[in-house]
Length: 232
Image (tube, rainbow, N blue to C red; front, side, top):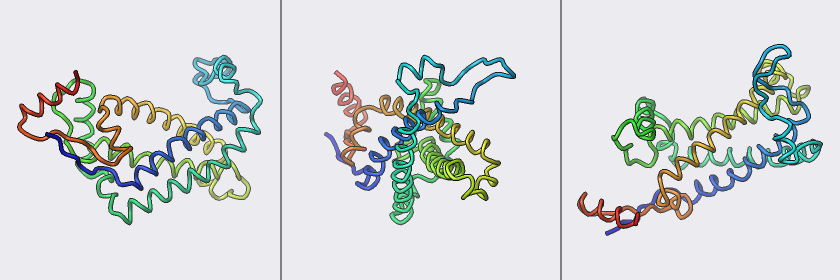
């Protein structure tokens, strides 16, 4: 037997699927802009141990000399990114969804258990709630990162008009470095998120599309047999 359980409201699914391509375009256009002033590296003096994006990377993706294109894309889609994030936060607040998403005093302890399970070190399965501790921390962190991207973006976009904001963020150079670091953070989040989705399986993925999750019901032996039959 199977049971259909409502999991994600329509609004949450819309915000999720709108944000995904918008953020991808923001990252891509940011690369087009960053090429024009590629300053970050790991090293000292004239010695470079690691360049984040070598010339071969830029040439393979045909990035060089597209600064104007990158700026136009970035400054258009930043408004979509800002509005989508703002509406998402307002919706979670007024709908009460924040109760599921906001970390609590148990979230960090639970996140550690989730990590141990994902790494195969522990056999204790994460709790079967809508969002476990690791997800609460990750999704809340992304919202905070989004706010950081908007503020640092405004500071480096209009450093004269927003001089107070630029100063508050440690100056133009530091604000730009924070903006870059946040972008790297999004990429890492994407990679981990995709791996987690693959690990969780189709049932979890379809819930973000349809809003419903299908769970087997019955005795533990029946559930195990059903899940084993579905994997064949």
